[in-house]
Amino acid sequence: MVTSLNGKSIVEIMRVHTGQCLFSNDGLELEYEDIVVTIEEFGKQLSSIDMENNKICALVLPNGVDMAISFLALANYVTVSPLNPNYTKDEFLFFLKDLDCEFIITDNNASNSLMEAAKQLKIKLFYLNNYSPKNRLSIKSLSTPSKCLLDQNKADDICLILHTSGTTSRPKQVQLSSVNIISSALNIARVLQLEKKDKGLNIMPLFHIHGLIASLLSSIVTGSSVVCTSGFNALTFYGNIKSFKPTWITAVPTMYQAILSRASRNKEIIQASSLRLLRSSSAAMPVATIEALENAFQCPIIEAYGMTEASHQMASNFLDINRKPGSVGKSAGPEIALFRDNKLTTVANSVGEIVIRGSNVTKGYKNNDKANKENFFDGWFKTGDLGKFDEDGFLFISGRIKEIINKGGEKISPQEVDEALMRHEAVFQAVCFSVKHEKLGEDIAAAVVLKDGSTVDEKDLKTHLSKSITTFKIPRQILILDEIPKGNTGKIQRIGLAKKLGLEL
Image (tube, rainbow, N blue to C red; front, side, top):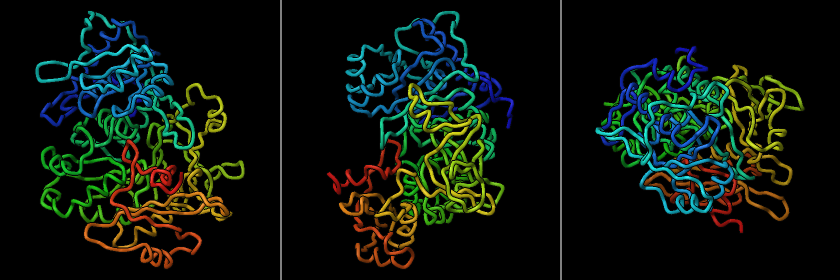
């Protein structure tokens, strides 16, 4: 891994590499040289509309090659904020106004919701000419000057802004610099031992930090290639494995659970695949799922720990040392410590709030002094997660502080209940969450999805739980569902789940 790449711009990094870079579902195969030329032409076009390095552009495109190249180009020159193209008009109004962006880049398939929001806020909307074998990606109706007047973003320039999920409060704007995102991409590539010959299959949305950094940018900094699919689809996943022969994938646990449910029907494709690892991040993966995936795919599952404020990766299990299922491994980039009783500690089995600092960690939220004061101290960032180190230095996460359930003074980690439910042979997916209680303040509920062909009732599940967890941790209600509601990135969000499932008004 060329660590000297840190501090370089995206184009400077791409110039180091040759060979294939991006693949698309419809057969496009693009070289690093092609992408560099496209990015530089893009920069000239941005100059023609008086863009400046510190101005913000919202990028609203579906997953694919156009989205990948547009992100790389904008992050090289200005500040880009990718947004989910499926947002409603009200969601677009909120995010666009909050960003105070100068203009929006989209394509001909832009939704009415986006166009109406842009018109209402009087934000300039530009459309792309899509990449094809005959045409490079470009902005429609804009001339291409002979010279680019924009400087490439330097190490400390803000090149990316993403909003936090905002499940308990107003979403915060996370500002990430060039050095933040490049550092994180290099860390991921080092942990996974990525090489030029590797090929990633991107199934994560590219409006999310996981897809942008762990899948796309970690491949770019390594000089390897990435297949830019249109997004995750369990029905087409195994076809992509057969067609593109990727060597690795990164995804969230719910995606892997859907992949696993179809593994028995695709044994020949799995056996003929080139996969050498599967990476999981952005949510905890149940140990039972890790074991089942490793048995099915005969390759290691690398569980990692990430969040937007760290440009994704903070800790990870490693390929070349023993892995511990249920742990997120060891530091894989930033320094990690626990904050307990107003002191930093790394003492084994001492539970505290996980804090981080390093070159991949944001220096602060945009326009949010209150959140900056609450979450940053002496160069450290408070993650909001509770965890502990074991005797070998492996980090185990107890859960989000805001997700810990306080049942009449008894503190319960929802992940512990998830794991206990997942040990039942009939359970395919499980999530425990808080529900309001008149006397206790909070109580516990859970939702499960059963494996195909399995039958079990709520009473059976409670009996199963009584064998492994204490009585006060057993959910008052267990819902058996066909599907558990998920957020825009495929993650199950505990906070607000009771309301979504009709258990609270």
